[in-house]
Length: 342
Ligand code: 5GP
Ligand code: MN
Image 1 (cartoon, protein in one colour):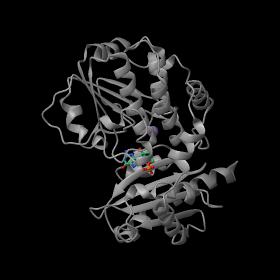
Image 2 (image 1 turned 180 degrees about the horizontal axis):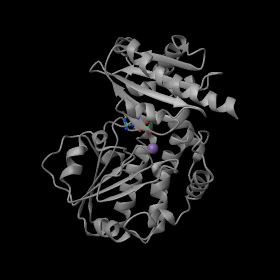
Image 3 (image 1 turned 180 degrees about the vertical axis):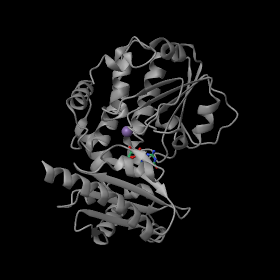
Image 4 (image 1 turned 90 degrees about the horizontal axis):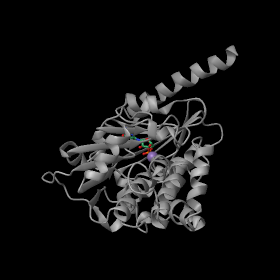
């Protein structure tokens, strides 16, 4: 997607008016916020406060992973349940459906105006203004172009701290510039952000690669107990509540497990499940060139991208694995048939 088409996709005037006329603005992203979600929410918050110091800008997110606390305005994040405040504008970022806004769902529904900025292919476009760019590597990439355009709202001047947040989002959603969404546009955007003087090595190491001892232990356990299925074409691993208790770990400590599973030689699809407090399983799916995991995740009530998707599902672990593996096998067989025909 070229730069100008971001703006032509939306009703410019509605978007500008929504922002310019709002005195109170709420920003939110999806549950279990990741780097792109945190980066886009804090990047936009910083931009808005820089441009309009008189506006009230509040960010609603679940507790963010500690590695993102260095980002400016992370101390403004609110976690309380709000059902009485009616904001002039609520902006949803990196969130493919309203349910995933969690407690901010009410704020979004109550707000006078609503905006939805995202890059998930499963986002069906909610809100008064909706900018969904599935070709973009990250919501931070979409946001950078929207802000840079300048003619939408504010003067387009991005501060160092805003650039830091947006860069962090792109780093995380591209897996440090290695996933298939690492397009020329993603690299160019990251390059332009680096020009703001960012310490990229520190951002990448501190927020992506650094692991606590507990995280390494959980990773080790998950890899040791992983299983290859579908004749080695799929791998999966599970972490249960009892494991979290044993290691004094939280679900955030499983970040990175799926990335290690997916690089197993011969594997086309990797799946990682962890048991949530309610006894459901949070499922992460990753694929290489053959399987569209967004379709599978959507079928199980979730969503995401073609090569990275997820869902939360209830039931016996064995049944969940069997059902999802069945869908993976169907797609793999279809892909192999196609290759044979060529
Ligand atoms: P992860 O496996 O890292 O949690 O998520 C991978 C991708 O799928 C992310 O873009 C994430 O937003 C999306 N995703 C994960 N779980 C769900 C879910 O339950 N519902 C939807 N709609 N998307 C999900
Ligand atoms: Mn994202």
